[in-house]
Image (tube, rainbow over all chains, first blue to last red; front, side, top):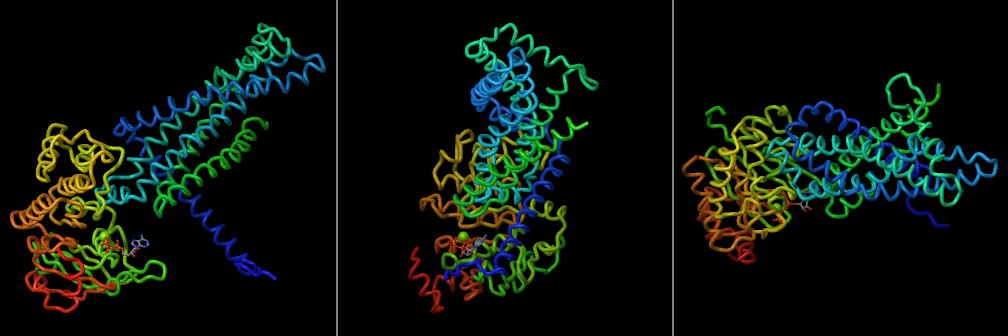
Length: 274
Length: 249
Ligand SMILES: Nc1ncnc2c1ncn2[C@@H]1O[C@H](COP(=O)(O)OP(=O)(O)OP(=O)(O)O)[C@@H](O)[C@H]1O
Ligand SMILES: [Mg+2]
């Protein structure tokens, strides 16, 4: 019988314990990093140049991806629900459904995932490269606060850009859905847009903005924070040359996506369970 | 810093282990104020690790590192930051911030920790770059310049705050003989004119000849030879003779 490593119950328990501990350590590091950034938020003005560079990186370089994916997601939602709704003669509801699902779920979620895979992975790789080539050590020796210098601009950039990109994603999704409704489902554009617009006119208590929109934007704001914190934390803790940078990047993207999905559920619960 | 006969830098039985490998083994030595100590030794014996302990980037597993009266493992954050403004550190690979231009790299410590205006900073940076024979490089990126140039930019950055203690990790590695020699003379001159205390890691006898007040040779985590430069170069010690035979100048 093969008895490799980790085969006895004791060894398995050990390795389970080790991975549990390492998850706790990394969550602890991420939370600590976030708190450190909050304390250093006033540094944004001093870091305005690098913040501007990060804003540029997180916008212009991913906007086309968000637009393309958002458009197709809108088309898919429209097609899937449209076929069902046509069966029961409710085509005029397509606009409402596409708009609400884009604003509540699809827009923020898709934007968060795209940001994690593009901007987040780049952040982890950039900072990870600095970690393994002694640049972080150099910053320390030069008494440069690495959280203020590296993390504040990145976190602020994503916290701002994620909601903005979500607005674009929502908009092209609704447009994409409209095209499908017109072309595939024989719902007139006018009817589609009437129902889309009326979906957004639910009266609301807090903002003039309908709840579907602001809850979605709040979600994507949180996704931006999650991606930036996880990516920066993974980069800062990278070690061991190019391989270390690779695994930091992989870990950053994986963990960002996991935490986006988990936090999405709880935020939905918070906003819509009354 | 208080004026006493206390050494400025003191290693007391410093031991450091990575995994199962013991890199420093009860290493002890002193550097007094104004002295230039050269560390030689085979590749991978822990010379760079020793320097990292001296600046607090690594902590010993046991033993003590004392710099300017501060124990580096118990020093407060504030004192450490204060101490580091008086210490320059040249990294073995330069360690320039890769996405900042050469000029911004050298200016970084001034921009972060001083109130100098932009003109003042520019003037100081240009002056330090000139010291290391670099001109018109402000806008170049670290990835676009040669290894030897990166090294010299790193040196300019280490010198920019006019430190009292400087750690040089192979200041002449990758430099041509002419510039290497002028870097040696620069190190000597800084020590002579400003009384700077320094530790220099090198593999070159030419560097030992010019800069050293004292030479130690590290091997297997401990000092095998502690002597004057003249003695060292004369290679009276059998191990030194063997070592220099391999690493001819
Ligand atoms: N952070 C670290 N983690 C694990 N091992 C390390 C670490 N830093 C250094 N080492 C190990 O310590 C040993 C000494 O490294 P160090 O860089 O001090 O050598 P060195 O004497 O400076 O050599 P060289 O002359 O080649 O620069 C090496 O075997 C290296 O693998
Ligand atoms: Mg070294």
